[in-house]
Structures are given as structure tokens and as C-alpha cells.
Image (cartoon, rainbow, N blue to C red; front, side, top):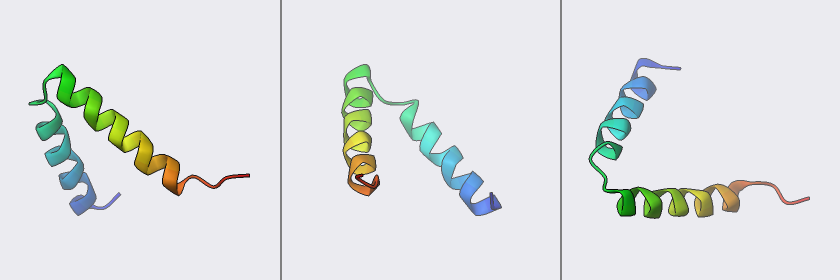
Length: 42
């Protein structure tokens, strides 16, 4: 992992720590939708 990628992950985590439970649930749901779009279908 590059230093830049590590720094970006740290920034994301610091933002996520400010989320309310409802915001976190919405973020996770959105992330799951994005991941599903890029997951190969057999």
C-alpha cells in the first residue's frame, strides 16, 4: 500500500467516526450496492 493510499484510508476512517448510526447504516448500504456492481456475476 502506498503512503498516499494509507493517508486516504486514515482520512476516510476519521470521517466515518463522525457518522451517526443512521448515517453509518446508509453508508454501508451504499457501499454494498457499489461493491455489488463491480462483483463478477457467474
